[in-house]
Amino acid sequence: MSRDAFEALERLAGGLGTAILAFLVLVSWIMVAAACLVGVGLLMIPPMLALTRAVAERERGRLNRWGLEVVTPYPQQDTATGWTARIRAARRDPATFRDLGWVAAHATLGLALGLVAVLMPTMTLRDATSPFWWGLMPPEGRITSYELPITTFPAALAAALAAVVVQVIAVMLAPRMARLQALPGVRLLRPHPSIDLSRQVARLTATRAGALRAHAAELRRIERALHDGAQNRLVAVVVTVAVAKRALAREAARTGLALDGPREALDEAQSAAEQAVAELRGVVRGILPPVLEDRGLSGALSALAAGSAIPCALTADDLGRLPLSVETTAYFVVAEALTNVAKHSGARRALVEVRRDGGLLRVVVSDDGKGGASEADGTGLEGIRRRVEAHDGTIMLTSPRGGPTTIEVELPCGS
Image 1 (cartoon, one colour):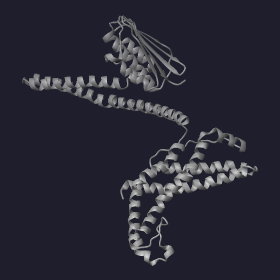
Image 2 (tube, one colour):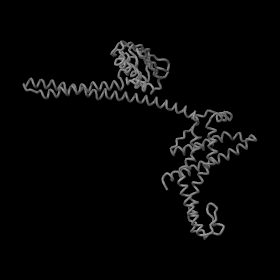
Image 3 (tube, rainbow, N blue to C red):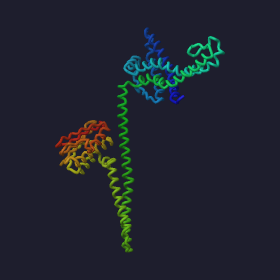
Image 4 (cartoon, rainbow, N blue to C red):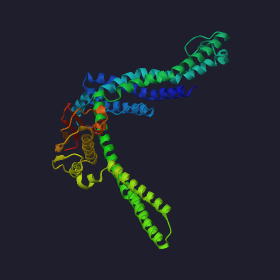
């Protein structure tokens, strides 16, 4: 027996347990429905709803153990109190009717499939051994598990062969039977598509916000580690090499020896170390500009505007402190946009406007250049869009031929 077939039989046997419970719940609902005709059963509806949910939750747990990911659709807090409120809440909840539909399907189809999976091996064993016991049984007991008579030894051999063939077919069909048994649970026990979608959106939004915060914190940690660790060590190397060069110069002057070789080696070492320090500072500023943490977004943008290759005017409201990931994104949007203006636009001046409007941070970068900017030109606009869309923000580019070019960005930042 293959591993898949054995696993399928195990699933079918496990489904038989919940199918029996579903069958008992179905019978109980029928009895409660009959009792409702005289009014007595109305009081039993809330307990029956709770019992139905308990059985459905058991099936969800079983399906989740097999990796089918059936999420509980019920509200985390049920605030309904009293018979009327509980009935109204159950009627409004789509999960109630989906649970009842699952009970009816699993109590019939699931029960039948589970019984076949559990009883088939026993029936096969009985029929496969019929050549050994058929002659020992009384005439009325000489029948197969399918109520077929066994009158002769060849008939017993045929019954044994048929039992083996039927069992082989059942084993081959077991994975499909298991999927068929689980199908009502997968379809009906999951949240209603509309509810599931809204919850997934909320969950993904919260998860992404957490991931962005964690990413920003990790960038800050890396920036600090590079700034306070590797960069300081490289600066120490530069200082040490400079001291060694001065000591070598004094030694050469004292002894009158020509030490050009060691001096050239120290010059190369100092130049390489200074270049590494400069590159590392560029990497640190690219990861997370320290000016953001020191001066906030307004101060960082002022530094960008002051250091722009073309004259740049900055208009920024009092933004207050924003989430670090939002500040970083806004900073890099302006930095990349000003870099594009300097390299490609031929503009004489640029304007950056930043303001906070409730829960939105609005960033506008414009120039009086030649226009015609496009994301397809590989000018960094695609990178800006990816950064903005990671925050559920929007970006709009207006750049007709002849100019001007305007990039408008909106970033959610909380209210």
